[in-house]
Image 1 (cartoon, chains in turn brown, yellow):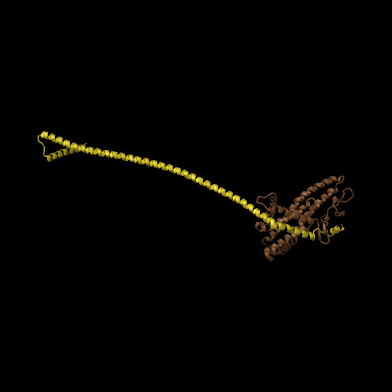
Image 2 (cartoon, helix red, strand yellow):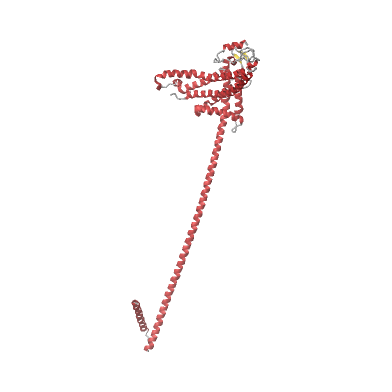
Length: 273
Length: 183
C-alpha cells in the first residue's frame, strides 16, 4: 500500500523491536482506506469497506437463495442451517419481544438486520478481508436510521400525533410535579439519544474489537526480534484468543442490535400509560 | 499518499459518517431485505406451514388409527360379552326347559297314576256293585229256595217274594249298621 509512517501496516515493514524504530500502534488511521477507485475528496469513490459490504450482501443473499429458493418439507443440510438461523431470529427475538401477532410483520426486517449486521461483523476475522464493516460508523448509522424511521412512524401511526408524543415522552399524570422534567428527559432519551446509542453501540464494539486484534497482530510481528520472540508468542496467543472472542462478540452485537430494534418497536406499539 | 494523510486529518472524528459508505450501506441492506422479504422468507414460511400441517396431519392420522383400534376393541369386547351372555342365557333356557319338561313329565305321570288309580277304583266299585247285585240275587234266591224248602210252599208270587227279600235284606243291613255304630 504505502510507506507512510502513519498508515503503513506493521507486517509491511521489516522493522522490529530493538531495530531502533517505534511501535506502529494502530489508531484511527487503521480505519481509513485509500479508495480503490474514485476520489476521496469528491465523495465519489469506492473502497475496501464498500467492497466488503457488497460482498457481504452477495454472501447473505446467496446463502439464503441456495437454502430457501426451492425449500423442501424435508429439509436438506443447507436449508436446515438457514432455517435454524431464521427461526432463532423469528422465535428467539421477534416473537419474544413483540409477540406472534404483532411481530409477524417485522420478522423479515429483523431477520435481514440480524444477518446483515452479523455478516458485516464477521468480515473482521475472515482472512484477507479482516475488517468489520460495521466499524465504519456509516453502516450502523444507516441501519439505526432505518430502524428509527420505522419505530417513529409506528408510534405516530398507532397512537396519533398527541398519543405518539405522549408515548415518546412517557406521559403519566400520576407523576405529578416531576412530570415536565420526566417528559423532557424521556423525549431527549427516546427521540435523540436512542438512535445515536443504537448505532454507536455496534460501531464502538466492532471498532474496539478490531483495534484489539490489530494491536496484538502488529505486536506479534513487531516483537519478533531477539528476546522479544517470547513476548511475540504471548501476543500471538492473544491474537487467537481475541479472534475467538470477536467471533462471539460479533454474534452478540448482531443479536443486541436486533433485540434493541424490536424493543423500540415494542415500545412504539405499547399502549401509553 | 499525502491525500490519505490529509483525509485522515480531516476525518479525525470516527463518529461522523462518511456519506458514500452510508449510501452503500443502505443500498446493500435494501438489496438483502428485498430478496429475503419478497421471495425467500415467504418461500420458507410456506414450507414451514406445510411441514407443520404434515406433522399435525400425521398426528391426526395416528390419533384416528388409535381411535379406530379402540372402537374395534370395544366392539370385540362387546361381542364377546354378548356371546358369553348368550351362552349363559342358552344354558339357563336349557335348564329351565329341562326343569319344565321334568315337571311336565312328573305331572303327566302323576296324572296317569291318578287316572289309573281312579279307573281302578271305578272298576272296583263297578265290580263291587256287580258282585253286590249278584250276591243280592243269589242270596235272595238262596233264601227263597231255603225258605221254600223250609216252608214247603213255593213263593211263586213274585211281588211278595221280592218284598220279603227286600225286607229281609233291609233288616240285615240295619243290623249291620247298628252293629257298626255300636262298634
